[in-house]
Picture 1 (cartoon, rainbow, N blue to C red):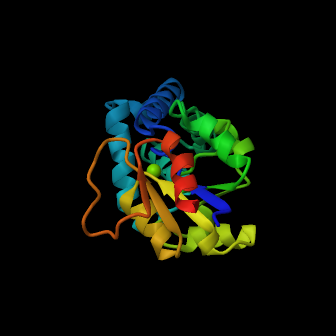
Picture 2 (picture 1 turned 180 degrees about the vertical axis):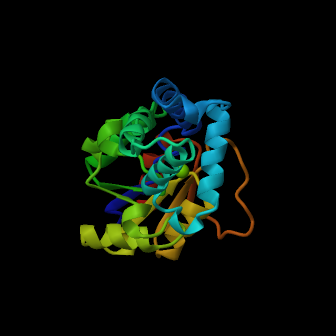
Picture 3 (picture 1 turned 45 degrees about the horizontal axis):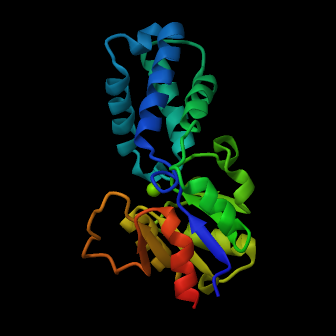
Length: 229
Ligand SMILES: [Mg+2]
């Protein structure tokens, strides 16, 4: 009996690449207008590349992107010899844009239908906010890697969600686009996984096969019905 359905967010409910690209542009414009020594000689892309490099050098903090991005912003301010700390304000600018997403067309209808019979929970390695994104009404709970202390495929995020819901791993399936984070992560927690393969990729051979595979979320309710029957 499946009572709980976990959903990854980025690239499962919306495409993240255009969102981050736009958020980087918005942040860049904001910095350029107020702290031009930071953006001098940079493009949004080169500043983003610097951010990625900064994050890669700190793998121990990778699960907490909010803290990491704020510390990167403080670092930029320091390097450009700005005395004031604008990291919180700059992060708020980025974060508003990062949560301006366009869900894939079928997402809201499927979430609404599934939420009538199941408990939906969001499990993300990123820092999206389902309230700001506008999908909170479908979810009982949202857990991210910063709260769990580790990102998927570590099982802690699943354990935390199940503990908060008072449910067991057998009562849950998890739906996500990432073979390692979502499929292997769920398996590490004893949770069945459904892989969302929107791009027609082949599933990596080194990861145990998922419980189910779908190309988009419209296939999820019939798959769950079939598996239950
Ligand atoms: Mg994802």
